[in-house]
Image (tube, rainbow, N blue to C red):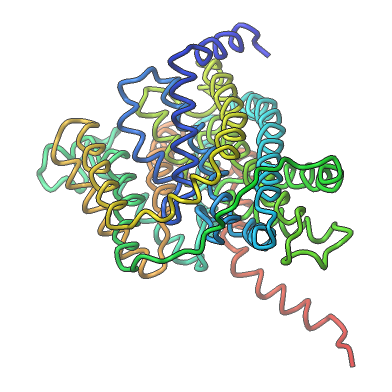
Length: 501
């Protein structure tokens, strides 16, 4: 470990301005997470253009802090009003809301906060150890190994979100297609520019991300009328007792491991981690019959897992340049926008970035413990904000953010078109996350393919000379075939299982 890089990274964050901005990001993250319909991915995408005037390290730290806080924020409304503010909080609501209904909302919130903080902090130390290790291995990679690695990352689109693997792959394909707009860096050929000079350098990430996450969701939510939600009015804050901690400590450790591993896997995300954390908590519990009726283990399991997943998802994003979730895809785009080279070169050239992000996420985890607990009753009330006020505000931020990036109206039009396309895609079962990952990874895969073909003198069979490439090609084939093989394997196992009379 480079002590100088550690001290530099910590010093970059431990300034009054940086800490204040991180605390503001935590507050925004908890609010966004608590509001059903809004997501931390959308908030990070909206925040991106407003951070371009800040120091790069502070900007990335703000996004990481918002990511952590937004993941926790969804548990507040999931427990208090049975309205998960974020998808991972769906599992938390299964036992959190029954606890609130029987007058133990404060206890449920306390367990959720402690589990979230423990899961987040423990996985951060795994993150700080795993990222440099992965980066040191990846430093030996050549363009052909990077191509194979990025191809494997694209294959994970089949399982990133939604119920249809085919739809995910189609959305990812269109993301890659959009990434090819502009002048090819090797041949100089114009592609899909239609004679428009503003497209020579391609379509920028920022307006597309804002449109596909914020505007598309706004249009989707506009079709639903305002819902009147029952709110738990009496919230007496109560931290877990020693008895509670003895009951949940094993669940927290288990779910932290699950969440970190799931987060590191590209494309899996915190929702999968939360569901697995809940299932394993029930499997190993001494009282599984209490699950669904108000078990604190049923709250601790998903909360530790989903917050551990946020740190885990940062590992492939920073160490390999492969986003581990939709939100880290936006953070990856932010790194590129701020002039950094994601992947092992980031670890070698700017190691202080890693330790600065670690410090920011550490501060964020402690901050949302106090912000979330002390403001739980207030956050339960913000769900009553009518959509007629909420979404016009989001639209204004989206327009300002898209225009502020390069001060040109073309980006606003790109944002609006991306929003419309995203809206119709959502209606037909196409999720935004596969498209964004295709957009981010498309440029990387094309660049490494072009460099490899120059090295190989256009002999693509030389890819198979590398054992690392062959390994990633096999993993890619397994990843692509797994959604189709799983039902077949399940049917075969069901046939072999003896039937009970």
